Image (cartoon, rainbow, N blue to C red):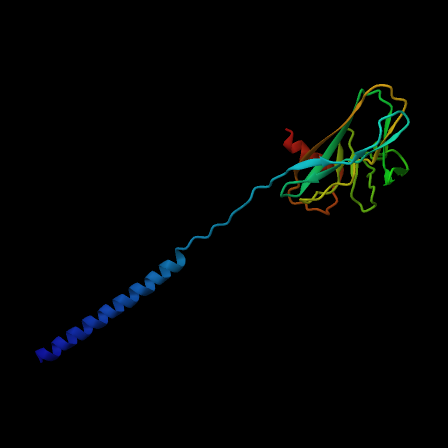
Length: 202
């Protein structure tokens, strides 16, 4: 009887040990499965832009010079863009034109670029619904976010020089802000555009 009891004891202990080992293994497997980590990398919006243009022609009275600035998005996020043009001295007789170039021949399209865009009239040189508004604050606002690697439409295409006898400068400034939830191709009204820039210039 003692012999049988000993065997039973050994058997019970062996089973208990096996259950303990299996239980530990199962628990370890569950812990291993649930204790893993997941890393999500969030990249901050990066806005970077630069002015690109072709500039050709002799600077002389009565000539039309090729100068066609646009703004390129060199960052990683869609961006709203605005630009300002200054002419110094202010009295300089020059006109900023929109049109097309064929070699050195320029075909003018209607009104001057700096007078066709207004608070309510979009200067849309391509006719695709994207272009520039001219705010009463002196800035031109591009009405659609610019995607990374892409350019705005030209702000103007040429400079017509009047009866100029002294040196002068035409300077184009540009600024850009992250477009938030708006994406390239969206058409945005001027009040919204102004609001984006107002937020970052507070």
